[in-house]
Length: 148
Image 1 (cartoon, rainbow, N blue to C red):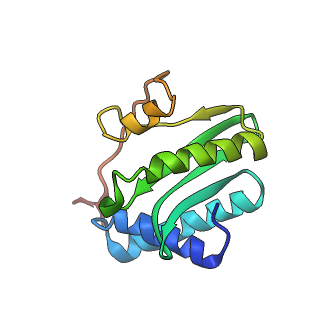
Image 2 (image 1 turned 30 degrees about the vertical axis):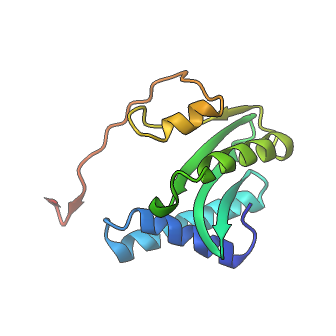
């Protein structure tokens, strides 16, 4: 689980890098604010953010948070593209699950994943089973009233 300012900065770096195709400065600011909120949740005992580090670089990360009802939901499971296939994400999911069940009062673990994305295999191999279908709708992003 992340602890130091350097750990949290590494989490921002990983998340911002994975989504670098968005406006770099604006998106990094968004990621920083989002991670600050998650750090506050962790400090409040509502879950944690976990990372796999090699030589000080965060190669994989995820969050596991609860609303206190016993339900814990994984957040943003990510692995640096160059580190995929090493088992980092599956190890983090396993470790975070144990911590969540023992320390955060979580009884039920939830993972929302795209059924057409390769990561779904990782979650199924760890015992997660399909139980619901989630549908999302998004409006196109606009800048100054124009679509782009």
